[in-house]
Image 1 (tube, helix red, strand yellow):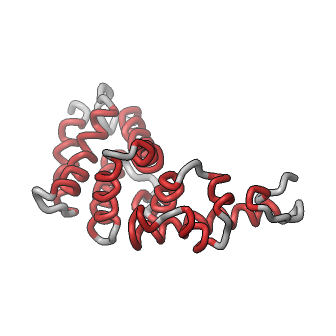
Image 2 (tube, rainbow, N blue to C red; image 1 turned 180 degrees about the horizontal axis):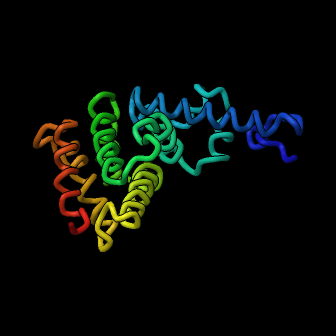
Length: 205
């Protein structure tokens, strides 16, 4: 078996290489997520992530092409609970849960402030902008898009919905209030907003 951490210059036995490699990857993500929540992207340097995870910088770069990629994935792992759903949930209810969970994540932890800072920095940093789309928005939109498609196939939602537009209608208002602060971002707002969107997305009686 190929040495799982050869890039870091350390030798490992063939049987222990994979588990140790996976443990180090998890440690890197944990360190990146913690640093992001503690001090944002400025704190989550490759040097700081590697030092906290107890690995060399080469080990970090073995799995991620840039600081933005590992930092955002670490943050995404820390926020994974905000995208967990109960089993056998209908598509409308699941979308409501996800919207409320996003508000809860942004208002009950440093994640909201961090997301505002990342969005601002992404306007002048193409690499960060790409990482934000690929590591944060992309996976979340994919989950919600599949829920919408399932709802359409089960007759819970209109069969002629535009999935991408429906996604924007449900989640864009959350980010709009988060970034501009023109009105309070609350869970009640998220529930009422989703209910209005789903009223137009409901199948004909």
